[in-house]
Length: 133
Image (cartoon, rainbow, N blue to C red):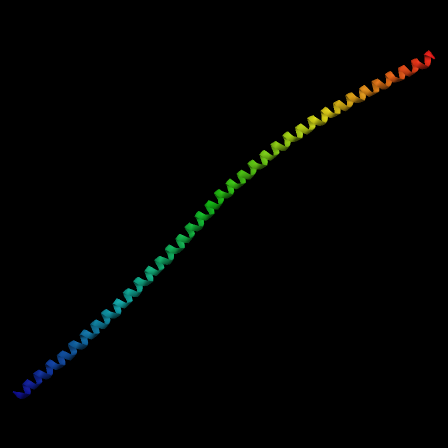
């Protein structure tokens, strides 16, 4: 009887240690599975953040290029307008100068005509004076 009881206690003790070992194995497997899942989730979220950062950087670059294009277009349009206004102003100044030069030429031509007319009159008067003497 004492031997049977000792066998029963030994069997219970062995069962207890086997259950403990099985539970540790299950816990270890569960723990390592949890670590693997966590690391995969962290890797996934890191990749997603990296991808989002790249997309954000690309979108920012596209926006910057678009804004630069709009500003450059406006600048070139403004510059072309300035050149057109300068051209019109210079044309107007050139027309004024041409008109002034033509007027001076006409005046100098009229003066030359008047001078030549006066010289002819002087010659006529000198001839008359010589003829009358």
